[in-house]
Image (cartoon, rainbow, N blue to C red; front, top):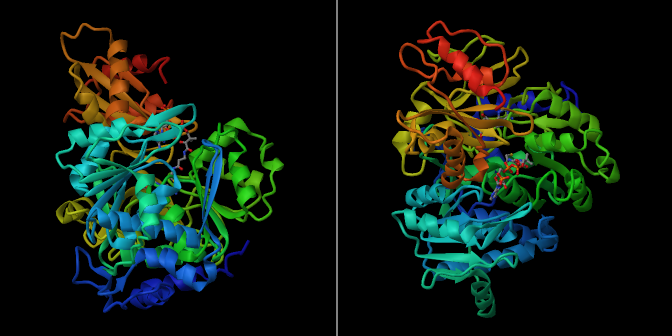
Length: 636
Ligand code: COA
Ligand code: AMP
């Protein structure tokens, strides 16, 4: 491990802030441009300026074609490892390119052209990667919707993105259960007010589905026909500032935010990160154990490793139960991965099943160099356990869907800085991270405040929300003028390390998945027997946090509360999806409030978490907290 002093980090970081344009112009040399940028950064464009203005590029070319042309044709680009179907499938760069050229041609036959939106509602199969890259190839804008979301969530994304085409599959596979996608897709299209022109459905042998005549097309037949006809689509030049994808993420209401990612900035930043942050070299095997439905999956299952000429592992399985808590070590060892990126929750799940790390010792992990954790704060006990078991550096790093890559991390390629458990280390180049008070004034080291990023943000970060510039400004740029608001709270210490301690809004983090409690409250409130409700995240040993709903029933409701609670649990699963892990609804007589009517969520949370709490001075009726305490007994 490098020690502080030998790391190039401080020099590189200082350079990135002193002359951002020179810094990113240099990083941009790793990308094949069709036309170079007219301006590296144009402050007059967009909501806060745009990177690589005027440049022309193709993202798919940089992920595939250039590697095939430059000697990597026979190197594995993608290894799909699925313990859920007992299959391992490898694609060389040449094979992946062929698949992408073919599917892109199929898409063109459906009339999909530059700028058209295409939704993917797919399980973790290689065809999903092919579809993402095929969109990039022809300049279509993909929007991947995580398979654990329900029909209503998919419908809201269809309505916002208005896709010409939807890619889906007959089913997903979860341990012990087949998730039928087709009924969810049909329901979503029924609810949505916009209709796609066509759906291309991958029939999986585990559970094929019926196709809707005139709307649905069989993926493999289209592929076969296109291959036989020798169809192949070329890369379409797009502007660096054109959108590559939209990824919806939870906002503070039930309406998701369409985070826009551009082509040029994303290429430069994500490519830069592969060596400088993750320490991976072209030709090496890299594994990101997320899902393509999340930003981590976009950047580091699909784009980053391919931009870099590395081999990417795509895993359709779980940390435990597929078949056991040694699954991660089996994958790392079998495919010779040098680095692995997952969420702390996965390690908590493994630690519970195999606390002594017995299964780790069964595998040869000699090539494995670094473990990266993100998605939620890496809690020190989990990091310590992972370090002790794996005997490699364990690196927490902090980022958001909005940024597309790491805000604060420990740059392995530049030379690691000492790890401080509980901190994701230091800001990455281009990110001036400040901690400010309510008046936007930076606070001294060690003082908690809102974590903000000085504008402009570096390449790769969102330029706006899909067709909602005003909402973008309102949600992120207006509260702290001159800054992007992360909605995370924390502090910086004397060494400049960032400590991310929690959200300032209603977002909770469930097993590394970002969810809005406001969105869940909207669902609870839609139940006919519910007068009032509150949803908050309570502690969970594995998932970090899980949602818990508190219900006040309407006067005159005579049905048994436990019956209504069960309906509420089912309703959240039906409307939001199983990913919410909403399993607990508790009926109470009333909710504790301040005299101005605000629900005392913080106090309820402390009570549910078994933490010490004090009676808030502003409480309207102190007795309500006794009632809450009684309702929680035996339930949490
Ligand atoms: N399609 C359909 N359903 C899905 C799904 C998908 N793609 N992904 C998850 N689900 C379902 C699960 O089956 C589960 O349903 P259940 O209530 O019937 O059991 C529910 O959604 C919750 O799933 P999950 O959060 O995966 O919990 P789990 O209890 O099955 O597993 C962990 C717990 C910790 C093993 C798991 O959450 C995990 O591996 N997390 C890592 C998260 C991660 O990588 N995040 C990316 C950020 S870096
Ligand atoms: P998402 O947009 O789903 O990636 O979620 C982003 C949010 O997850 C951040 O705003 C944080 O609240 C949280 N988060 C992600 N990674 C970390 C981390 N390493 N430490 C602390 N919080 C994190």
